[in-house]
Image 1 (cartoon, rainbow, N blue to C red):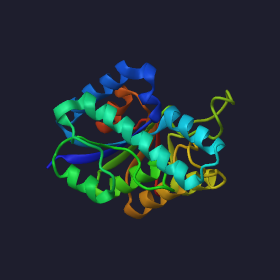
Image 2 (image 1 turned 45 degrees about the vertical axis):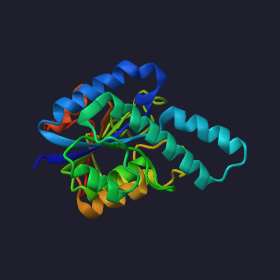
Image 3 (image 1 turned 30 degrees about the horizontal axis):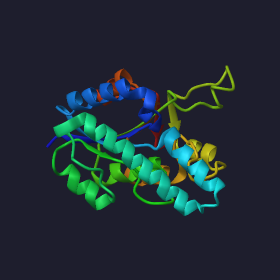
Length: 225
């Protein structure tokens, strides 16, 4: 049986202007599926935040906003499934049991969020644990973890490796409202730690992902010590 790899794919890839880029990712996943089985978790991205913002301004509660974000992430998952055609499991699983069943098909599995109150990062970590993935790649719109916001600070330093305790202390002050953006969250880190999942945060780029899957240290590696 091929090794399984869990890949959280940034919701930014599913924007209307990124149709060609999404096809490139689909071609890449088909190619890489010959050596491992990708289990992909689609983020909600700008589209989810757009809907969440409008619904929040109309008075929707946070759990309802979470559900809205999950629906959008599942639509994003369907876009990738369409691009993958017969190489993909035909629909996004909606819970961990369905994810495991879909993975047993041997096809590329693409899903979105699963449960209100969980980010897609936490969902991806739980899926990596459930399917016994050999690694979890969190492919985002930044190329790793920095000691400060690289968009605001030119001298921000990127970590090649970061201990999970240090990353947890950096994240502990972040909020967890629906649609919030983060590289990782506390729930995801707890899952990574308890199951000792090899995890990298890296740029959502085909060449970068391919290098990481083939064993190259890309982005920032989360270490358990």
